[in-house]
Image 1: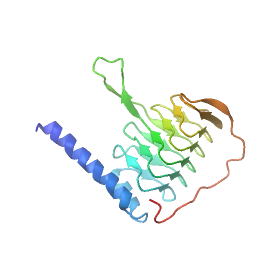
Image 2: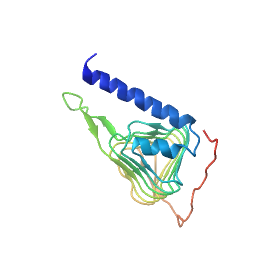
Image 3: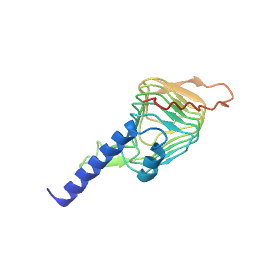
Length: 181
């Protein structure tokens, strides 16, 4: 096995161990794992077991944010999630893809940013380079390929504007259950 191939295999084994550890570690010990991986996760944020990371580092999650089980956090290209964001189960957030027009099918990374009080419902997909503005809502199963302005609701495949989100956005999520895996 060539040196670079061996290093890549070792990296992916390590990443698999990080994801396994995250699934089974109690909430009290997860901050140690986050620190070891170079993640910046607010103490009041909740990332339930079964969240899958695609890289070490390049992940920032704000106060009170709730990321449910089964969510893919592709942080290879950089992922910033604000405060009081709700991401429902089985959502997928991608920051890296391939250039289908490139002769070599080159990987192409673009960071994703999700601002405070945004909501991503179950099974939604956020594609590389998307910015969800403050209070934006992505409906269940939507595929978001373009940025969403603050307080706009989008749905469908591809996602299209469905209207404005009303309300003060003054809520705090704060749901932490010790054994919510």
